Length: 193
Image (spheres, rainbow, N blue to C red):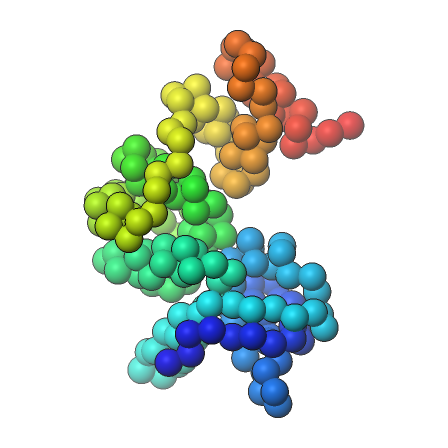
C-alpha cells in the first residue's frame, strides 16, 4: 500500500514524525535511530514504510533503510510481537545487536527490551535465527563473553543496550584489559568529564 514516504518533516514527536507530503501530513511511528538522524522540522526526509492494518486503525511505521524495515517485518512474524514491541526492540537495540543476539542465541539481551519477557525473547531467537540468513542479513562479528559481561554491567547501571554497545565499540581492541578496566573505560566514555 504505502511503501515509501518522501516529504518534509512537519512535527518531531517522542516516538513519531509527521511528514508533510503535498497537502497531507502522515503520522509515522519511527524508532529512536530515525529521530536521532532527522535534521529537524522543515527538513526533507525519505522513509521506507510498513502500513499496519487493524480492525479499527491504520498505523504507519517508518525506517531509513530497507534492512531495518525487513527486521521490523520479521519481528512482526513472531508470535506475541506486535508493531509496538517490534518498534521498541529496534529503538532499544541496534540492528547489529539484534542479529548478534539471534545468531548467538542470547535471548537475555532481548529480554532487556521493555515489553519483551524471557518467553518472547526465546521465541524471537527461535523464529529469526534461520530467517536472518535467508533474507541475506549477515551476522555481525560475535561478542566475546567479556563483551557481554561489560554490556550486562552497564545495563545494570541504568544505561541502555545501545549506549552500552556504543561504549564497547569505542574501547581499544588491541589492548589486554581486565573486565573491571573495560567497564571503567566504558563508563568514562559514557560520562566524560
